[in-house]
Image (cartoon, rainbow, N blue to C red):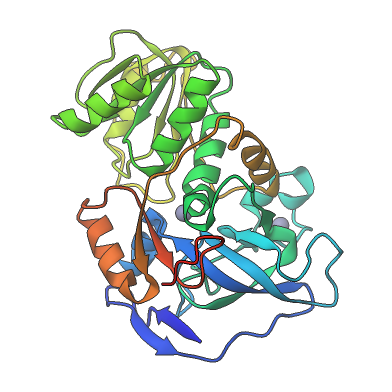
Length: 338
Ligand SMILES: [Zn+2]
Ligand SMILES: [Zn+2]
């Protein structure tokens, strides 16, 4: 099968013809249709995350069709079913975190496209317990960005509780999806972009945000919560200063530059800073139930599998007009070939 392979961080991926994987007892073999590109893929390829499997097939927002089913899999999947394969690939089910409904923190967790092979390929295997059925309303391209930007964005959003005034720092893929849920649920949305990015500020106002401005500005009202989707540490004290008493700053990314020091007074009055790590299967079930109700719309830019390096380069340079989605196989009911 064709696959885009990372031999070493900070090198372009190599197009290879490699052996098709065989499913283990609890795994599905999936013919991959699409795989969306996440910022975490960039962090892996650029060597910013420690100890990736090498050589590695990146990619953890995988949409595919079940081709073969391991013998130990219950009847929830059938040959031909469409499945989504997310970042959380496997947990041990027995550590203190797994036993307390926090499998996202599992000591021995494995991650798709990072510590095991991912979706920049024609086929992949995945533990069936961590695969999702996907809502029918979306086609294979549209649904792919929901698998990480959507899911982990949703976990970040849920950490803000019932905050009425919600700030979003950075308006990339995850923020664009979460803003739609926040507006659907009647929150007042305040969006912070790169200073001077009037185009994004205008577009989020059109979407329904109450206010949009640069990340160096203060919002017109104090916020009950802020989610930081940009991997920029100095945004943490900035967001903290924008909070009302008891507010929370949620850091939604897996990687962030260092956070500068700030006065204790900015944290005082029960303000909280937290990060979000990975996802649980329950996050996925909740998110895929709410997404078609909103309905959340995704913005995508497609590339054939072989052009994964181009997609990554354009992402790194901030030149994408939507989430990059690699097309590998036939796209459902559109007959598109990558
Ligand atoms: Zn565990
Ligand atoms: Zn991701």
